[in-house]
Amino acid sequence: MFTPNTLTNQTILITGGGSGLGLSMAKMFASLGADIAICGRTEEKLKEAVDVIRKEGEEADLKTDVRYYVVDVREYNRVRDMIESIVKDFGSMEGLVNNAAGNFLSASEDLSPGGFKAVVDIVLHGSFNCTHTFGNYLIDNKKKGNILNIVTTYAEGTGSAFVLPSACGKAGVLAMTRSLAYEWATYGIRLNAIAPGPFPTEGAWTQLLPTKKAEKKFLEKIPMGRYGKHEELASLAAFMMSDMAEYITGECVTIDGGEKLAAGQFNFIDSLMSRGKLKKVFRMMRGKG
Ligand code: HXC
Image 1 (tube, rainbow, N blue to C red):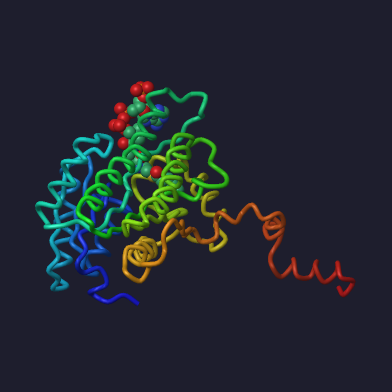
Image 2: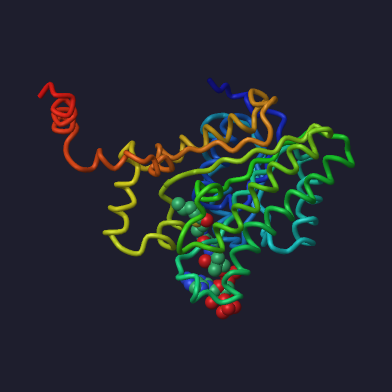
């Protein structure tokens, strides 16, 4: 479906692009012709990531430019300066992926105000800071652009126990996505979101899965019986950033192997016995057993 030119002529900033899903998206976008800027707090990690993306690009004979910026997305002025530097370094900027996040497990009654603030600041204020400065750059320069926000499946509908700051922050990001998709459509700016289910990353897994038993339970919740692969999420993100998705805005696409459908009232029946035995019971219930 993709060609090596799918994202040519786009410079895309991926926040938190030094590791995890951010890095996977950066690699995918680079392989499809985009120039890549990544930002994060840890220079070492960013430098390594840039080296990896460049090396893969050279091996594939790509001419993509890749750079990193040491910036904490919580700091508005630093973010504004970074957007200015990206435009200066690359010549222009067309895309932003708000991927940087923070999260940890806590009983909500034990949260400190500082803990709540730290996560909401990264997730919601960080996404606002990047979106606001990038949006103003696009509007001032009469340029079209594209913003993709990485949320979670609990951003909408359910929320989630034990990750209250993340649930609040991500719900805010989703509200921002839809509000601005309408408000900024007139400027040719698209905003969409992706809600990933469980995609193993070192950051999320060490923060969010306390025991082996928790990991097993986590896996059992997924009807497809497996975690997501990074390429699957990165491919969806590439599509959303490409001209193929030109008419899509304000949308949130879930990619979770069916995990969020668990609330279906009779879904639990599947866990009572094997599918073969279940079918026999159903036949007996019809009087045909
Ligand atoms: C309770 C905690 C805590 C914890 C930190 N705090 N960790 N409280 N339990 N495990 C509190 C501190 O006591 C402090 O509050 C405040 O949070 C700030 O902590 P710092 O360490 O000083 O802040 P900072 O360096 O800014 O760290 C931010 C962070 C950290 C979010 C707390 O975990 C982080 O940097 N995470 C980045 C990586 C990450 O989380 N990746 C996972 C994203 S996964 P006081 O009151 O003492 O000031 C994701 C997807 C979810 O989001 C979907 C998964 C399926």
